[in-house]
Image (cartoon, rainbow, N blue to C red; front, top):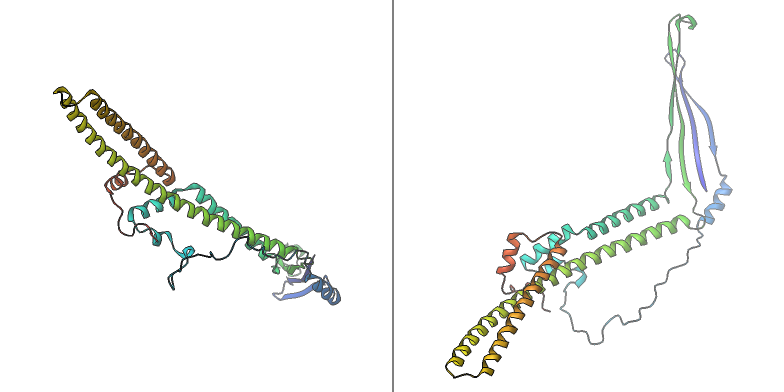
Length: 303
């Protein structure tokens, strides 16, 4: 239901340079008694009162460790304050900038915010003004002054104030629903952002760990090659048996298999990281990843 207060105003020129203003109408769509009645009904709502259900788990862990006094909550710590390694920070920034799913989630949040503003505006009065201008030319042979005249008439026929009486809480419920949808999408966006940051950090650590394992495997392979060469020479001089030679060869082949496995795994780790970044690793990033042997102090949190 909408109520409106409308003023009709007419302005015209009488041909003598005198502007006349007249009121052509006045209308009010509800009497004071009706207005008081519907205002009372506007306080009613059919929406049920929301009661937050009790959590099935305890709010505090019984054996939780004590926290430092004044320390910020984990939810308030930004990822740049959480991860201090410059290379990791650069990789996370690239992933956040290029991820299309995260970009789509952000646009969904903006759309939900706009919808909430529209629904909230429905609870406020709306103002509108409509104007019109009419012009008529009188030829000289029909004019009393024997000169052509132009008569102009201006009308403001739509000065309105309208609002919807929310009898059963429909408008407010729609506004609350839009707010809940906006907050849900906003939390979804935050969760997606945190998940992407976590996955990039995990992929970075996995890549570095597998690269270090590959280096260890290559060192082991070099040692097994030396051992096999020495055992072969000893077998030729009769100082080693064929069993010793075969055992040295088995150890060598096992080291070669491990090197191939870690080389393949390292390529998978690199592909996974590039997938999260949304772009191939640049030569500069590849060089920095290859040169990074040990983690810098405070690169990742330990407590």
